Image (cartoon, rainbow, N blue to C red):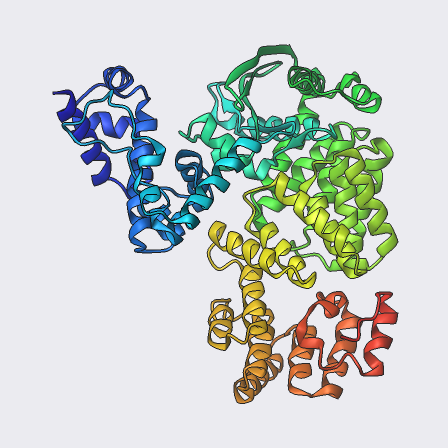
Length: 619
């Protein structure tokens, strides 16, 4: 009967294989066994939980598909119910001690022994390693691969060795759904508090929000985010007093509960509660804080409850990203300022809001309002890293003030070494001046902090390509496409790599996946047609955009780069002058685009770079 049950469970999982939502509750319901009884039965028979059983059935089916080479690794991941190919790779490698891609290339590298025959005894010992078919073949290459993999896992741990933490989205236990803005805000604030600790890698809010209401095991989440500790939190009360429950769990190398603490104080001390929680988390992880970090986390800070709530409401609506929510955010920030003109947080919110433009203001007016609010916020609190980041990005992309941009980035990262936005954009500041070592360093840091960002992986891919690290560029580009289908710069990188290899059809296929109506994508398409000897198609793109520019505004820098490809040099510089006067992006990154290689020897190009105060690249 036990064997019949196991077979029924296995068959049920296989029948629902592609359903990524199929879990413990669904399995127990379909086999007609209560969840608790099923858990006890599997623990007795297999020594594993129900979720482990489901995951292993998925992995064993994946292994069969990989050996048959029926699809790509990513396609197989989805086919067996994993919604993230990157997570599938980690789990598969952890289970089989070999990467799925390696198994796909060499199907005989491992023998599936996890699924047992119905008549096989549960306590029958596994065959000796040396009796497995891979060794009976006498294949020296297979033996060598096994030895290399085994040695790797003996030498290197399968878990992050540095101090790292992810704060999972908090639970709203206040009984009031309208408090969600407050729960989300405190979650982000605790991440910011922890981010000030230089020796601790703290995963970004954006990456952790993916696990809101997730049913994944803690080990699975920690694996996907690449951390060894997780923080769970619940907001129990958010009225006149604040009650927060914090739980800290060490996941690797062995699961262990480090902290379970309830913080209860008046709402005006909400900032102190967050700092105290961050301090105690650092202590439990055994992190030695610097004198400055000790001071920051121990400072006594109070804030009017309604001021703070209006600030969090503003952030909540600002993060929604719509035109309507933007105006709502501004209203809340202004209410916070009206209540307490001496509080820096609301000014910080205003600065971030106006920096997004997109709300009916001209670029100059938005910049003026953003910098005015930022300056006010920093006079009140110079440690606000988000404000320094806002200014750094404005100076980098809008005002072309390279020195002020650099100083603001440095101030932001001094205040919060885990500010992934600052790292990601500081990389492009360094790229402007050809400092590829620093550029790649910051781009890699951004990914370590926000490991689920397709954008950051694609940016790193571009930088690796520029630095002639082509294998890394390809790897990062493909990773970006795993995380987001049709990742723009992931496709750009693969297009450039294909052109470099003279794989013309492949290059065209990549660029044709970009948005057809976007003039930016047409730059890459025209350049590809020129490189693949299809000049007529590039000319057709040029005429299409010139015709459109007579009816609507079309980015003159994009048009200039296409003119450059076609050898229309005078027209290219005419359009570049227009782009310079209008301060249109991406004129400051002309050196980065292969489409401008045709005009770089012209003296006018060097003159333009001098006006931009950017190093001149002839090739």
